[in-house]
Length: 247
Image (cartoon, rainbow, N blue to C red; front, side, top):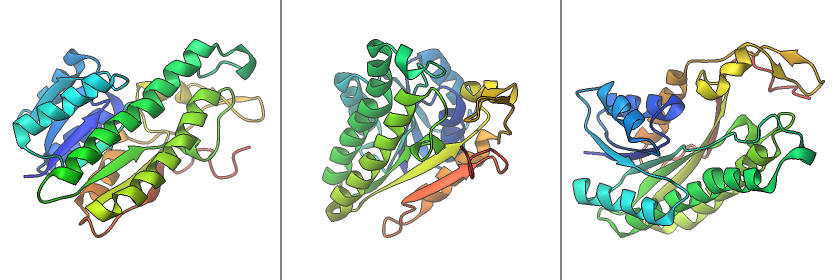
């Protein structure tokens, strides 16, 4: 039995990944702030083996409780999909972004990702057989920004450094870490892209999106590799989105 933890599992990409992992035979711990949406994810695949653990990833105590619950139920963790994130402050010019919003984005997107990765790393280092895999949800914004997205973009660039450090530090313990940079998956967060979103030239333009299930298929592939192999960085995006040549 292989055990996965998925954060932000109550909606969007997190839900799609959790369901795809369950369909591939994984037992999945569902983490997110709202118990009701996590239960909806579990109910979408009644034959799956799910553990629902409401978790605020910005809280070290709640993250510790999440991994303790996984250990109590399954005895190990083989995969963390570090997915929880927020786009708070998106669309706000840099000169108008308040410090509280900046901190809130950093707390979720960066500190939350670190806390979950740290807890998974500890578990993977100590368990027998030793090792596991961490897959971080980066973003196209880990490479190039959108206008008025400084907080989100800064945290996603930082996610790349987090991924590289985890990869290096995990080598002695058979802990692999990779990053999936996602562009325009059809979720609640990207709904505005289909009606028109600000481009680098100042114009509004609708952008194509892809099914979140296509992202999930990529995560399942990365997760299924033996620990001797790793997809370090991958980009999966709507084919015609304005990423190549953006700006």
